[in-house]
Amino acid sequence: MDRPEPLICFRHVSKSFEGPPIIDGLDLEISRGSTTVILGPSGAGKSVTLKLMVGLLRPDSGEITFDGMPLNDLKESGLIDIRRRIGFLFQQGALFDSFTVLENIAFPMREHTNLDDTERRNQALEVLSMLGIPELIDRLPAELSGGQRKRVALARAIVLKPECLMYDEPTTGLDPIRSDVVAKRIQMLQQTLQPTSIVVTHDIPLAFKVADRMLLLNRGSVHFEGTPSDFENSQDPIVRNFLDGHAMDEDLLMTDGSAA
Ligand SMILES: Nc1ncnc2c1ncn2[C@@H]1O[C@H](COP(=O)(O)OP(=O)(O)O)[C@@H](O)[C@H]1O
Ligand SMILES: [Mg+2]
Image 1 (tube, rainbow, N blue to C red):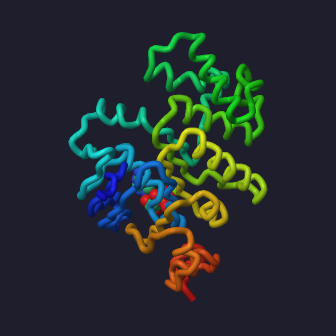
Image 2 (image 1 turned 90 degrees about the horizontal axis):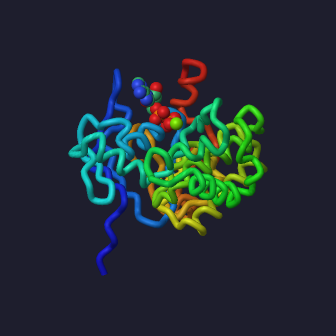
């Protein structure tokens, strides 16, 4: 049987800013309906990879397709159509401070749908209820805890029922217990919305809780990919260093200027 076409495909993609390439001949495939975790040290190009996937950055060379459509050939309006199908949780999931929770969640509905006020409120209530916080609908962001703000940002990302969800470092700055809450929430959304999910993280316990497949990004390309058990059993030194939390030479270089 033919394998279904991947939702997102990178072929020999490179991207540099000033200096050496951040993404360097990257090949990757994101299969539909599954959860792919992209791991990698800080600065490996994980966030850049997500931005390339949604056309917020353009590659210098190589081809990226979303649902078979080459992003390079699309104009901004085509990219907007693609972004409508994606729920994107940025690393700093910023809410609009002067908007209520409802207005924040209504924002993508105003941009992309013809729903009226009542329908928008009902949709917002539905996703807030899914996340256990319907009572916050009329609050302002300043009246929320950090965890509540993250949940509202998530509600906004899923309100259009996207077929693809992208999370950039969803547990940064959280203690292990709160991090586990985020993992459970990602699992709950996998079951209810059954999206294609991409989780960028360096939180190893989170990765093992949610991943169907994992990719380790290093120096701008995929160093290793496989199932969680392939990772667990790997003897590859870079994989082991990363999973076991040992600093690599380049980490030491970044912190104290010497690899010694
Ligand atoms: N818009 C940009 N302009 C210049 N440099 C950038 C830009 N975005 C990312 N970079 C650089 O690319 C590298 C990888 O960034 P990033 O993808 O954010 O890493 P991470 O894997 O930690 O998410 C970093 O060194 C960062 O400084
Ligand atoms: Mg990042």
